[in-house]
Length: 119
Image (cartoon, rainbow, N blue to C red; front, side, top):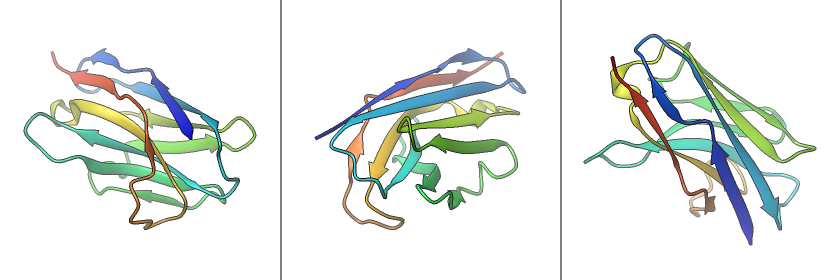
């Protein structure tokens, strides 16, 4: 079993920044992909960004140029730096870990952290 604990959500004005963090513990394989997904009310959960243990990254078009994903393999943590936030970024953000890029298995999920962008 793998446990994921997110932190860093909150309320921010449009144009502001937030940094989300996720710490993984438990039976984690050394080679994996950690990522961030989000789900807005009435919408499906969608990928925001993901990063492999080797450092390969993948971003949703909506995140490119504004968000940066990073990880610390030694600490089993992943972070998402979000800049130039927009109202449409409002959602619950979930941390996820899977075995590899494109793994169809759902992997493990955190409990989610709310991000609200509003003036």
